[in-house]
Length: 336
Image (cartoon, rainbow, N blue to C red; front, side, top):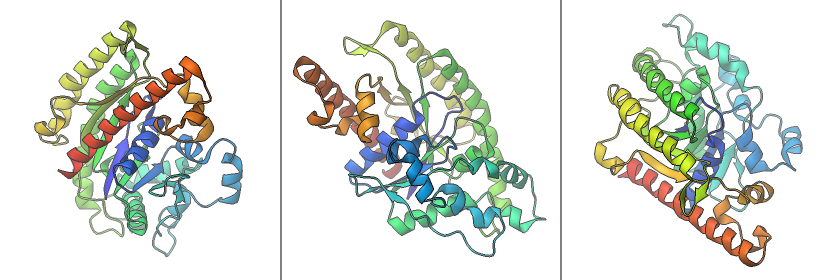
């Protein structure tokens, strides 16, 4: 089992979309995948359940979510955390969802306080490792190969806990100035989180739910949601895409290297960019309507004819290749 978190504290970088599309593509590579919605906005859950079924799902399944699965730890109940009863994603028997919860933020204060403890309160010391324990036991129940965690766009304690409990992380970015600023910010934040984790792995080793000994290694970044002109990013986007790559290489990578959060350089194959993913344009509405990745839309689901249909089929097939290459690189980096 490998845990991969998608993290950027800047919103609007297609983090949820990337989680869903990467997870689905990994199943097409023969992997069994669990998607985890750790964002209180629950957008990943919405993508999987569908807009028409969203409200009725939560009414019918009020306890089937990430928060309620952790209640025994956060409310000090005399029982171990149990594996989650995950939702099997429609049309994909190898893809599962641990739904999100609007109330997950209620655990923020307790988790933050637990980060500061040194051994006096045993029940509080169980909290940092509880997220990983839930993921581990749920993965064992469903024979999961990869867990993909959709984090919220913040520097919350929950994000910190899930990042340091991951085997690797992906940094989604959008082609704008604020994404470049966010990367510089992350280059300062993540080393501090890892330095804390080095102590916490020892400090919480005797708790009921110890932190894993793994380190969150940098898989790479993605650039999402830009416009294509003649098969390449439009001029307005090319400059900022280049700046993002430069900032990752010259600022983020050295800071992560200082705390050993990089793979051997050969695994990056000369490029820290995992994928460049243009905006879905008209395919976005079809993806939301049918609840499947854009690259799996059938000709019938495209609901077009003539040249429009041919253009959409070509773009669908291009996205299929982009995500296929993305998933294969992730597998190579984590399994070879």
